[in-house]
Length: 214
Image 1: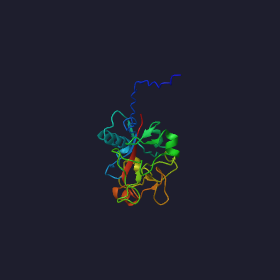
Image 2: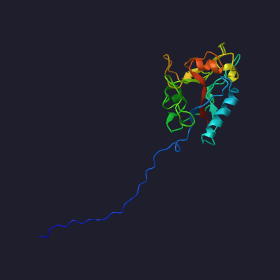
Image 3: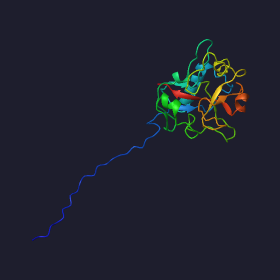
Image 4: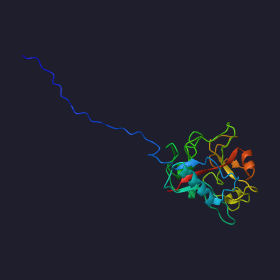
């Protein structure tokens, strides 16, 4: 009886290329402005704020997207424009490709928005509680669900619809989810006023959030 022999068969190698996910695969759809208007709560209205978003995004290399500032307005006798109605349906990723929220519901109920993910258009961290200077007060002028304040609200919460750098106040959120027990990213408290100095007194510099609405 002959001993069995082992036969080796050479199989062709199949090359498999794995491409790591990059920010290019998930284009930026959200950022906090690296700088504000420099004029407190006067952003040139919604139009001026949107233009500021687009300018910063383009300078950071993002093209072909429609950018909207996450800001609400107030109107006499009727509800104003709501921030959540301006920014599209999602999903939104930050400058490093990290998902902030897949849709409007997640954005307003459980967003992935903390200091480490609330980045500016260049992918840099924004100063938060404990940093000097603190910049975590982010202008929104909105209620926690992203809607504008009701007409019965008499207090200015939008710096005169983002045209005032003096009288009025603005609702702000905390992008780092910290500060005096105020963990809301979009409706933590009101500013002391609308000037650049007044915004700084509560921990801000007039920054706001931008979302790709397309």
